[in-house]
Length: 590
Image (spheres, rainbow, N blue to C red):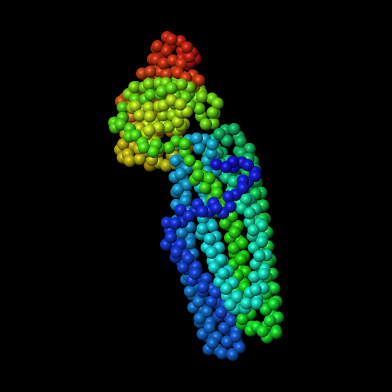
């Protein structure tokens, strides 16, 4: 992804970025064909009107004939009806086309982003991603729904009016053709600058969105540290930068519009002056001049329309370039070309064989170094050690958020890289230290563990996780909305929801990362009983800083600096001395 914090816009890839829209437009060919047909019909009706105007002047006024005037105006009204119906149908087709194409683009973009690996989200800001999903796609939608329609209609009208002008008065048409290069010059001169500023404007808006997303999602921290004024100033500064870039873009586009209007209507004035001299000289009929002037106005309006749309095209090209960059991101962690099916039922045997791993953001420091560990099916193994010892990295590699640089990890004798991500992660239940609660009901949040679970299964999982009582006490019970990020729940309640998810998932491999860290002593005792029931028949890995919670483990693995420094039972490790005994002394000695 681009560096959205840079004040200098990167060179745009010109209009080629808009080619990426084709796959989203192609499935809706019927609407596109209908739009083109109605566009041709409405443009044809518009081009007929000047002919009727000429007929009125030369035949109706010239011969003082009411009958001719009546017939001509009746015909004009008929043409107007055709124009009205065709314009409405054209609008319907192109607008529905844009809505369907953009819905497909948004779905594709979101589905692509949500499947990217963890390393992508570590180097990206959620606010910028949301900006591309919303603001950038809206810019593209404006182009499809109105910009392309106006551009093509203007092009058709310009071509039709030019042909009609040549047919009506060749000499005046030749004079008009001389000024066309002068009209196109500002579009070429200012257009490139407008596109660069459009891209920069979208980047600055993404910066502001990222700041807002970060601070609003951390509103309690902002208030706890009384940073409301500071964060408001920071967001305001980002908005000011976005406004300054937008002002430059608007100014450049205004100059473009002004130049085109001056040149176009200057050309019309020149043609009218020449035509008026021909009429006075008797070499041109007044009706012919009126018809030519109307066609000239159509042509001028079309050129002005094209210049206006050009700005939208350039903005959309910049937005589509940003979207294209996102669609061009590729995950490093992917399914193998020929995956191996995990055995059913799984036993849950795990093996880390000489695993060495460096995080992409810290390539010089090994999070795990020559890490070797065998875990038997159904065994409960606790990982303990100081912060930074590599405990969470073990979980991250098991979930295949990353792949090790050397060594291999096996589950039931199968390399994790040989299985599909869905099969692998479907065999794992995780209770993280920081529980994520979604803005939905309590039942929906528990059902996040297994989407097809029945209501009774959800309730049973909640009971096992000691969550049933507090959920039932909510106004709407299991249908109660928990608020964004679970703001209506305490930390312990959120953690019990996470445990209920893991119970509902019923996976052969259970990962507990400080699963009871947010619970009071009474709730922790109840949850420990629930976890003991959950661990039976499953391979369980536990991360805990509080050693009192891991004494019941079959084996305790002590880690330090990405290596295993000791392993055994609580009693044997205490007797052995070393790091575990030191940690136990610090925690258990009053």
